[in-house]
Image (cartoon, rainbow over all chains, first blue to last red; front, side, top):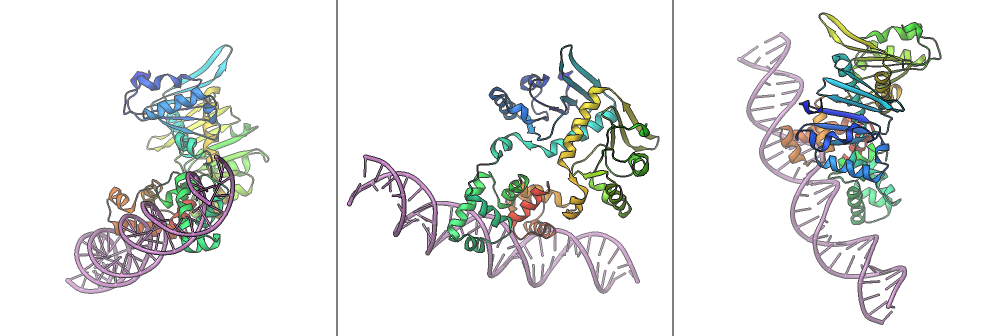
Length: 190
Length: 190
DNA sequence: GACAGCGTGGCAGCTTGCTGCCAGACTGGC
DNA sequence: GCCAGTCTGGCAGCAAGCTGCCACGCTGTC
């Protein structure tokens, strides 16, 4: 079944203790949009983190959701859907369906959860980017929409220094523009 | 079926043009946890807004998701699930299932989408700025950290026009600086 | 004391963002 | 047709932001 993927492969799972570990590296044709959504539980072990980085570097889009996820859900080409339960002594329970309303509905829910999740690298990088307490007032001034002039005055530093602080902050937030920095900061809740 | 609800009633839908309008007001016993998740499409008409406020005031928890949602999904007591497609000339398609793995999986996805959504009153209070669909690509370009030059090229408009769009967006977001605009946008989830 | 390391501030010059003004293109109504 | 309204793009000029360079002062170490 996995070989037949044509358009899209998406998967949501609690962790890597699933089928998901296998198909990605080579079974899937390159260029295919693959999205995998996990909970932070998938980041506990170092091998898992490594594996995630690897598949991400191969073009698989990986995101981490802070909300609980189904144990495992796979949707192929918006056509076939597999839902799995947790492992039990008697094995795991699977359900495979192709009913369009079911698959379509779950796909939309997946998309909503996906949109709310954060990219893997952003998650690593942003996991509360190490912002000194000194960065806080800068963030505040920026978020208040002050100009650099007034912000520098408020903080009691020179314009040059203030801008240096801002540049540092943007580096930490991995942002290319002030808007992007603000966006990141806002998304992370200050 | 709706009368038999015991523990929980959750529903996700694009708008109010669904079954969801009816059962809530009186058919559902008081004290039952009811959660309803909609897209902003449910807020377009004034009657719909009023209806949502009413059911919210009766204890139904209503949230708005900025991501697309399935046309309609209902889960009762984590036991029964109904997925519906959009209306077609031949009627609407429904799927009813009680398979535990299916229901459990979808319930978890629903929970993830729910967590990412914002409460109805917060949504009203926060005055989620009425951003035209035309504002979206601008927001995306800004959030991607592009310069105005490249952003304008990507959108296929002139530099002047792009900047006008940005200025409009900032007005809608009530922001004095680009950072502040980004911050607002990020905090509101794009 | 001499030295390195670090943060700060001033200066200069460049890039980018921002906006007012005007001109052209298009639409809808009379 | 003509006219108003709206959207667009170019131009120009200003404001804001960014950064490299150098100098000063502080701290700690040898």
